[in-house]
Amino acid sequence: MLNTFKHKVLFVCIINLIIGFAYYLNYSDATYSMLSSDIQNIIPVAQKFDNQELFKNDLYLNSIDNVRYYTPFYVQSLRFVANFTNQDYVQALNVIGFIFHILFGVLWFFLLYKFTDNFWVSLIISILIRGLIWLPGYEIWGITGLWSIMPRTLYIALMPLPFLFLSNKFRSLLLGAFFAGLIFNFHPITGLGGILLFCVLLLCIAVFYNEKELVTVKNIFFVFIAIGIGMLPFIYSYFGKTESSLTYDLQLYNNAFNERIPLVFSEPIQFLKQWLQLKTLFFLLPLFGYLFVSRNDIEHFKKAKTLALCTLLLIIIPSLSVYIENFINSTFGLNLRMSFQLIRMQKVAIVPSYFAIAFLLVFVLSKSQKLKTLLPYVFVFFISLLVICKAPMFNKIPFVGDDLMRCILPNNISVGSIDEKRLSDYDNMAEFVSKNIPANAVIYGSHFFRGATKRAVVLDSKGASMIIEGNPIQFIKWYEDVIKLEELTTEEEKIQFLKQLKVTHIITTKTYQTLSVIHSEHALKLYKIE
Image (cartoon, rainbow, N blue to C red; front, side, top):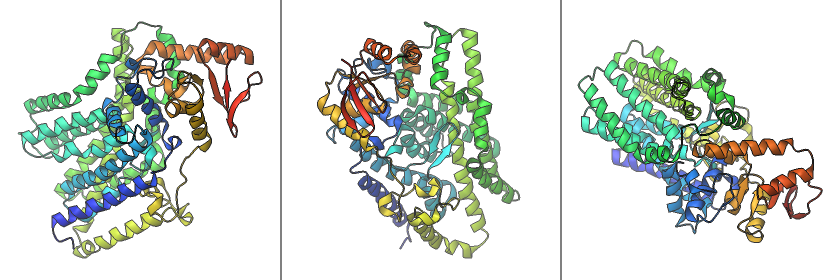
């Protein structure tokens, strides 16, 4: 049945098409509350581009200039797809999810196949790499439900592209470098990790594979030029729309920054300690195992050393960005605030572990022809396990009962299911507000209601993260307003202060004695400030 490479590729495409379409159907009735908070921050940006009359008194969307820097490729792609879903951004995300579920599986398969030359191993690992892994810094790896269709996920799906062009030809190297820079625009933080991996891999090619004619100083110079050309859209948007010079009180800014961003992002040692958890250390086992078993095989040992060096540098270099940024700021009197993002690049260090698993399997299989014949049966067993692993009987079984396995397939093609976050009270409240509250209303409540109702929201901490880089002065004001509100003791004082911020409505589970409830959804109440 799978005698030719064309048939094998068709088989891979069909499998990923089934997974992608199943996810699409699974979320055909999805609601706004099923999205991640990151996406709920991004959709209002797209809505603001659609109609700049919206959000005039919003925390971060009062001016479109505050967010022009923010992942333009993702935002504009989302807006483009929304043209075909009648501006329904939830279903626009569903369409994007369908496309990228397919791309994710197909591209990672081709990359694995390029380096392993083993069809079944590549197919199995390309499905396994979809699984959800929770990494240091609240980062994730993998692609799963609608909530995961974030900029970082789109980048991860496209990440194999530059590496697919790698060869001993300089032209291919330049093309790969350009694509490394181009796809960076989908999620610059993860994208920098991908670029770092690309460059480290070139270093390994020069050191371990003695490709000195390919990896010359001149060639590397042109590689960086090609990467830079690919990165230009974001570079223009970011540095043209953000301010690094000090025109505000640095101490106040630091106080606001520490209020919004956990200290761990500014403390590399504390961040590194998060890698010492059992679930992340587990991914080091294939690396050490491959190094050990391949020590007497020259070619495999080169690959093992390459993977080990890539992992090490992908963890160390992002950590150094904190110290470098602190040095630049103190030396030149600037307030660069990028390292708290750059340190998150470490998540790309998980990639060599998957290749270690693949190479380890190939190495073991090379010792036994009999084992090779079992691979199709291993694949069938693996897929069967994915179908049933959500069943309650697997809840406490390591690996099988973890998100790594359970989040690969959607509920509608699984035995058992994972509960989906659907906050009906919030969705119902948003619907009521959209139909009954003026479009120029200003809400004091969850960031959720910004995109769900297309109304301005103030004082929310999730929205504040959007102006850390986009508008530091406005970010400081957010901090001062939050502190002032917390210091007020009486309900009357708090309401008067909110009125000063032009708040017209409050959505909360708290009770306000001096205000009357306009609408409620169980414990969630809508108040109007007169």
